[in-house]
Image 1 (cartoon, rainbow, N blue to C red):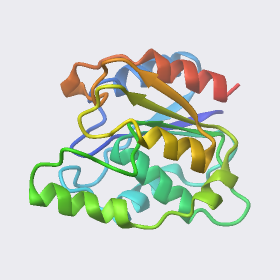
Image 2 (image 1 turned 90 degrees about the vertical axis):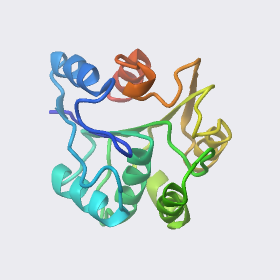
Image 3 (image 1 turned 45 degrees about the horizontal axis):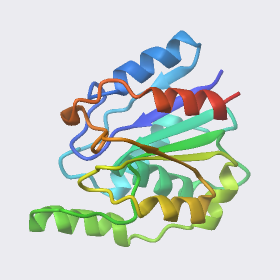
Image 4 (image 1 turned 120 degrees about the horizontal axis):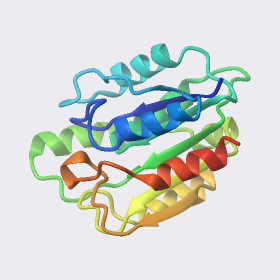
Length: 190
């Protein structure tokens, strides 16, 4: 059975925005879908989030698909960097994934984001773990500049999708459905 894990972002939760809709749509097509509640979402830290995701997934394989939103994308990258041996995953979709951020307001936000942004990632190893990467961005995201798309294309040879006026793809942006994710997941999981 194909398994999908949706990792929410900073201050996110499993019932936010488009997560319930996507979970329901995928379950209709017989995917086993998990949207884990990540630890301490108002102050996400790399190690607890990666450990939680690892525990939730168990043993990944070619029927394992990962979808991340915002810092959930960073979590997936760090998780993939910890996989050892011959394990791989079927594919990964990054929604508002980043290696650079903008418009962080408080010193606390900047300090927290810096830990994620400065933590090294073995992109070569990650690219080897799957042949299917998709990175979805919005042309009016306040925090994730479109220049991030170049990085995902260069490092992972990801398919890049630019959506119009979807903000940061958050529930607070009014995004309750995101058909492009469903379409892309169905393509990479066939």
